[in-house]
Image (cartoon, rainbow, N blue to C red; front, top):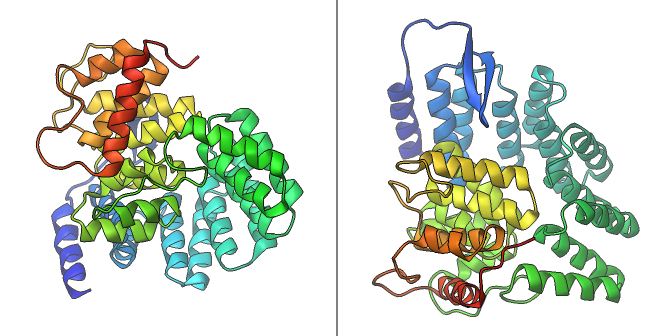
Length: 387
């Protein structure tokens, strides 16, 4: 903790900026120029430090950095929401509620504040308030899957399994490729003995995630990454982050492995945190793209691909060129597979270039080997793309 505090103090001094600035600035957000309030460079830097620490699972350091960022930018609903989320995960529920209230006082209709407090309420067993909050979040931001999935889990915990199944069915009408939604339906159907829905979900999961079983268990392995992959498929993202640190695995690779295992929620959460700290992280952007593709979120897929293209060297091609800092070998394979599904065989081969599918040198872990084999089968099978 002393080392973390010293590091934070040093980085905070490094991030400090001097001089005056205009109260309003123009920023490019998802390709659109939006005028917004001025934010100090120090707040940006501290937010990046916090996001990186949160991605590594170092919640104590992340909380310190977010709170320091709030000192420089007290009018950020996003920072207060992140503070509330981490305080809740650290067991500080009273002060977490205070942070969520601060976020809503700044922006009453800020959907992430309602959604994260609903998640906090759920963890504390406050199911009725959690349901009300998540329903408000869905009304404010209906295009994100986290809200409906969280609502279905709350309904299941309330014993309203029929309502949970209906909610998941409704989500699947809109997101028929959502791996997380099919897994949630599989779990609810198992709990109530709905054999027809169990079989349907297992069939769809085999089609969408052709590895492991319907529960998403990874291929058998004896390597040092097996426990990390097991944590991911069990939804234990914080444990997976700790295991990645022990294995000297970059935080972005946790997102990539989650995407490879079809764990859409974990892949997106980890990739968003890593990309927040390093917007040019090619591996994180690939994980975001794959997670969006698996959930059927075309808009998020387009944003991730645009960001990947922007982070790459050169330009002028319809396909993302090879980035200056290339994606990891597993991320490279996953993006080739995504291109095969969405565009076709030629697009996948253009992304891969003249190199072999297999990374040169060194032993490959079982998950990477499985993705390699699957991609080889797909490329050998033809040039068809997803309809």
